[in-house]
Length: 191
Image 1 (cartoon, rainbow, N blue to C red):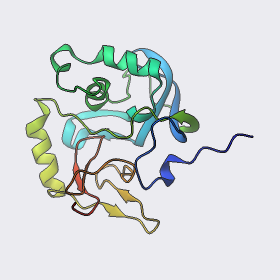
Image 2: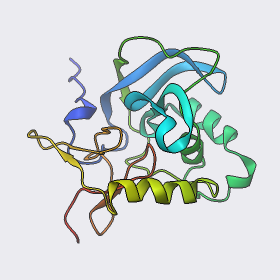
Image 3: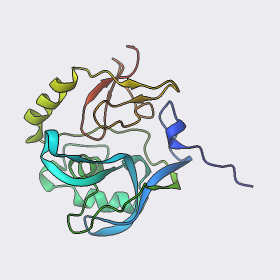
Image 4: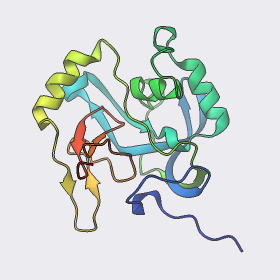
């Protein structure tokens, strides 16, 4: 009998590489024209406020993409950015491109839970050069670092789009860089 996989939303630490988790996925949706079952992070939203991106979208949770999806996403990384990230260039792709196809509306309802294997334990948003000035205004609006929304069950949410942050690695100062938009959030104690 197979043990049930833990819910990603129940984690208070980074997931373990190679283990299975129940994660939200958006089924049968195109990402760069590749139709698939994409693991998503955070709620469906628009980014008209700070990032001038109005279509509703999700962000791909790169920790739980399949090996095939990861290869595809690395190939989609813009050429000028391929040397930025040595660990995995697919992170540049998910940081710069939300799960949105202007010709295919995001389905109504919520993503479904699916059993997915963890490929990497954590990642952080990688900002493009053009986005840095805009990001400084964004960070200033929330504080530097931003204070998380603290829920009674121990979860810490990004104050911008309510992403669950405890399953992402904090730096030595207890700061988590939210993988959605790069907001620096104070989530832990300093080392």
